[in-house]
Image 1 (tube, rainbow, N blue to C red):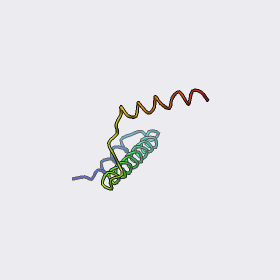
Image 2: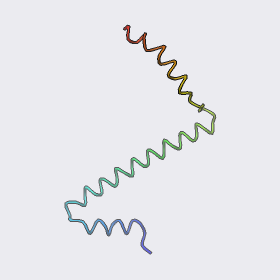
Image 3: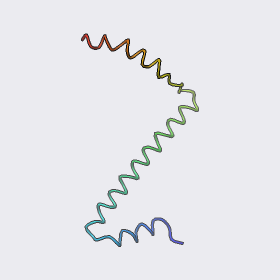
Image 4: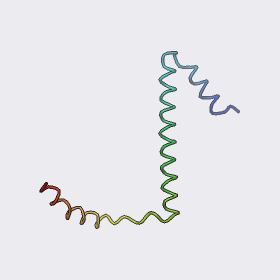
Length: 75
């Protein structure tokens, strides 16, 4: 059975030469986005485990926003 990397290399070889570099750049970009997303999720899970997260009360947020809004318009 072939590894994923071997299959990816074979797929790249099927592409015309001028399409290979953009395809590799796209894969690298997507992999980096995935890595950053995974890192952010891990940070969030660590915050939950450490008790640094509390439930968000959207209604309370809107009430506070409405109280602050008139002050910011006066400036």
